[in-house]
View 1 (cartoon, protein in one colour):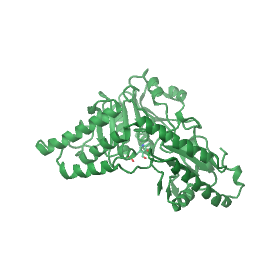
View 2 (cartoon, rainbow, N blue to C red):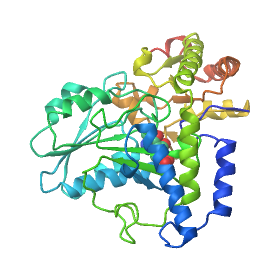
View 3 (cartoon, helix red, strand yellow):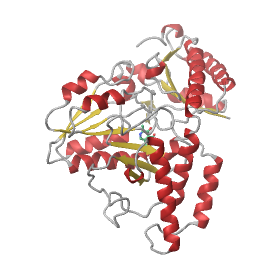
View 4 (cartoon, rainbow, N blue to C red):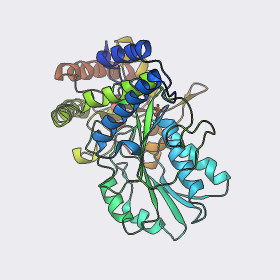
Length: 392
Ligand code: PLP
C-alpha cells in the first residue's frame, strides 16, 4: 500500500499510540480535581503545553488545548470578532481558506460583520497590495492560512505580520494546520496573535488541537462551562490526547530541517514525473519557496478527479481530490477557480501528500501508476489528450 494522503491525515507514531493508551490507563484523573490523581493529570497537561509552546517559541500559558483545528479556527475567529466588535466590524481573510475558516466568516457576515475576501494570484498566493488596500480603521481581524491544504501554496505570513505591525490594534490569526512541523514558524516574532494547529496532521491523534493566543489578546469563550483553559475553552481536558499531541509534535519536529529537505527531494521527483506526462499539469508555483514540501497538486483536465483517485486506489495507491462530489458530478475546486484555472481543470484537481518516510522508490511507483492510469483513461476524453493538460 502507498498512502499519499498525509494532508488529509497522518498515521500516528507508534510511540504516540502507546503513550495515549498508557495515559488513559494510568492517569485518568480530572485535571481540575484537587487530589493527587487530578494534580498528576494537570501536570501532564502543563508539561504537554510546554512542549507545544517550546516548538513555537511561545509561553506555555499561551497555548489553549482544543478538540481539533476546526475548533481552534472557530474559537479564534469568532472570539476575536466578538471581543473587539466595539473597535470595528470589518474582517479580512482570503478566498482560499479551509472551510473551517471560510464558513465562520460567512456566519459572521450574516451577523452583520463586513468581510473582505482577498484574492490570490495564479500560484495560489495572496496579493499583499490587496491586503494593504483592504485594511481600514474598522478592521479588527485578519485571518490568513500559512499553507493551503489543497494546492500547498505558502502564504507570506512573515511579510503580512510586518505589514500589520503598523496596525497594532488588528488581531492577526493564522491557520497553521498544514504548516506546523513542516515549515519554520515563529508566531510571536512574526507578529501573529492567534494560530491554530491540529495533531492528526503531524502524526498525533485525531480529535485534539491547539490555539496559540498571544498574551493579552482577549477571547470571548464559545462554550459556557467550568472555565477550563484560562476560561476560554470550557470542558474537561482530554489528557491522553493532549499528551499524545505534544509527543507527536516533538517527534515530528526532530531533525526538521533534514526532513524538510528530504520532502522537497521527493516532491521534486514527483513534480518531474508529472511534468513528463503531457495530459497532466502541475498547479501553482514552480518555486519551492512558494510550495509546501509535502504537497504536490496537479490536474488531468477533462477527467473527473474521483475517477483518477479510484483508478489509483485499485493499484493500492491513496491520493486525494478536494473537489466534493455531488450527484455524481465533480464540483470545481474553489481554490483552483480562484487561481484562474478553467472550470474543467478545477474539476480535475488531484493532491498527493507525503511524509519524510516516503522514498524516491515510492515517488517512482506513483509516477509509473499515474502513467498507466492516464494511458487507460485518456482515450475516454473526446479531444486529443496532448492538447488538454497544459491549458489554463
Ligand atoms: N485548516 C486546514 C488548513 C486544514 O487542512 C484542516 C484539515 O484538513 C483544518 C483546518 C481542520 O483541522 P481538523 O481536521 O483538525 O478539524
